[in-house]
Length: 436
Image 1 (cartoon, rainbow, N blue to C red):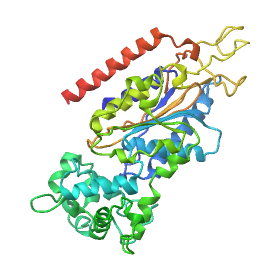
Image 2: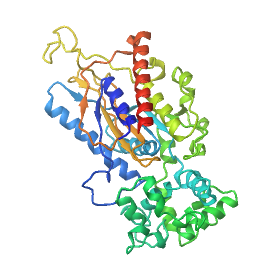
Image 3: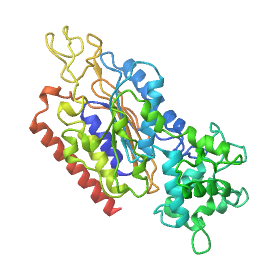
Image 4: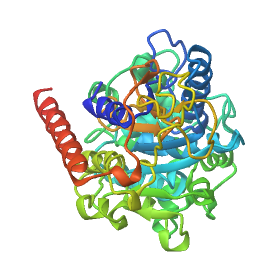
């Protein structure tokens, strides 16, 4: 487990939220199926049930505590993709959840078009720095998911040569099922000088992408080069694209992406001038003065994670995460003063007069470009709300009893002390990375 996951859980909890750390389906030791990738339902099924279970468990076990409907979702890389999928699933609950902060970092937002074209064209040319990415992506679209259009239709993304059911050394599905790291996959992959990384791919699918790219069309599945022998494969990939989903959100979404990202091309970032709900992190007041994402995928991952964490300590005009108001407990039945406030709980300004409520964080983390759990996705609740991020260490709900200050109480001293803690944590992450 990489330290980013701990930071993603610790800081939301420190802000007065509950934090959940669920496994992504397929990462558990007792999982008998194949770990998938870039499939919206995978991340939704990994996170949303835990959000609902946590709310139910907390309300049953604590007579004076409940989670309200404010939720934040944040993630980077694969988990940035998951952030969009999970946010959409929460919306589909149609249960009055309110998104107070949504952060999407370094994500393949336009998976079926610019991301797929850019990565595969560069892999074919031998210039993509992480060709093992193709193993993860190809496995997810090679009859390993029952809910995608091309499953068992003879239109797998991986070539027949590398889906050999007799020879596990030439079966991509077995590599993933065995949990091989990116480094461990390399000896089994076709590569120069004897071959090309893209020899892994269905030849018809590869030719469609290369021909479309040569014609200047970066949306191959919607080009003249899409043929009947890959139409269902294209349908499956387009169905899992999250660009339209992101554009449909009716609440603010902060996007963090480095222009120099060499894995997830910056072209994935939608035109934010066409949607007032989408804002680049560098354009935020206060936070934008500190975080200006740059560098490669890993470097910008640290910057974006830092920027998302800052939302918990930033001045109120940059985020309403700090709008956690103390709850009234006039009769003192929940441990507070008869005429005062229970200092260990928080309440939602959207439900005055209700039982005491507290914030929550649903954290889920996912494997990413380093072959380990490098993606950090967290849905964090503000005030009495639930949030989440996906993480390989399936965890139980943990809550901080510390009340968060109200917006007016965010002082320079508080911000400074918290920032120092963040910096210390980031230094610890850097040291851990160097040591490992």
